[in-house]
Picture 1 (cartoon, rainbow, N blue to C red):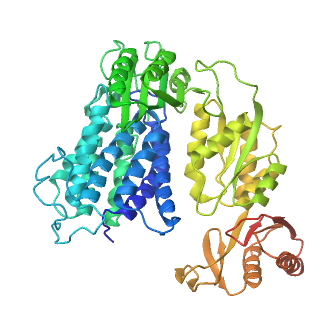
Picture 2 (cartoon, rainbow, N blue to C red):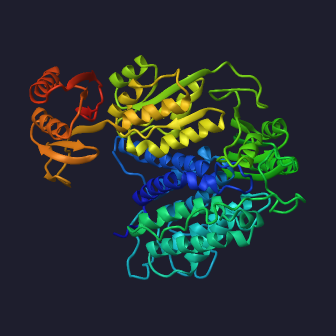
Length: 609
């Protein structure tokens, strides 16, 4: 069903874009050859959009918790989105994406607040011909607090213009080219806001396919631009949020996977872009920081950083900036920020390790990152000595205090979730850093957190940690994996054993329906007990213990040796005793173990091994 471009649509857009980037992250990382072949563009874009999505959720939650229990306006949400992307932007492409979102927010927020386009923003055919609030081609007027088709056209044009201004030396065949094509496609489109979004997506998709013909390094590698691929993915989320339909699928990310990406020997032009730290003398470090400074100081900063290195992108405004540059002298880049204002969240990454891995045919990964002292995990910016690391650790996401204590007893670092607030990848990365381990296994214990855990693992690898994600879908699968964890084994053997144990554990969960709804088992009413097996509603009951018994019988009908019961907060011990007795009396040679999980949402989690 088509949607207006309002606050809810922006929230939906962020969620769809984040999910799509999560699925495409590894593919985008694999085709990352420009400006540096460091294999992290997909991960950086995911982290940037994740930060934007969290800021949007926070805007909704903040209004809901206010005394008036109000809802945020479109202006509130797009500004939150832009700010979240700015402070969470990672890498070259993530920083440019943050500026694209800021450009869109400039127009959409001003239009939603004042009903008129910002001065000087009438770009493209017919941009300022129609009065604010005019009906679209279908005769529908935009809802209050929503943007119309013309507003989206102007927002996309403003986004492309700002992105070009943010890059010190724009290069065609990159995400910038794709952004311009999206704006041009939107300007040519007639119809409502959904039609404009679809046209922007199609224009960007067409431009993406042409990028190898514009940039030699892409043509030699047989790939399209990674940053452009990510932007098309984000625009696909916008088109789906507004039209209610998934857009046409992107072509495979790597059309010629077997084709190597040789480096030009003369070291000149955009084709000469090997991994930094390579023998041809490319900059050795990526430096990123947030900066509090006024506009005049930032103008001088741009000039100084441009003389120090390349891939300079400075985005933001209103006193807060995100600075990204590739340099040989990381200290000088940070010092330039200090002279301009107050830099913080300083991150320095050395590219040398990425060049070696790419040359060996291994997946591209950036080298160890140095986090300056205002962050956890601080080390010398030039890669100096750190404290001795532990050998191996496990980081597990769990939904209750009891489960967190159980994981701690088993030697794992627990990341507790809160109802409706899943952890961000940054929280998982912080947990990895706290372990101070050389090797880390992550247990997301929730299907919805697999992309988040994968992004955290990618960041951990960038910091020199060997990391693996076991795709556990429930806490009981995580318990099974922890039960066979053995640090004395090799890392690969341990991961295989833990993955096997998790995969051999079927899981179920009981929940109480909040409203009438259609399910795989029929229609449920508010207050019904839902028995969900492997993520799908299999049974609907009226009483928790009886429904749990029916779930156990159905699962044990196909076999099982061990039943794990994880009790939620407030569930009486008598229920656990009744279920233990039911298993003992009805299923021969099946053992039962009970844990007080304390999870606030699910009264009972069941595992069958």
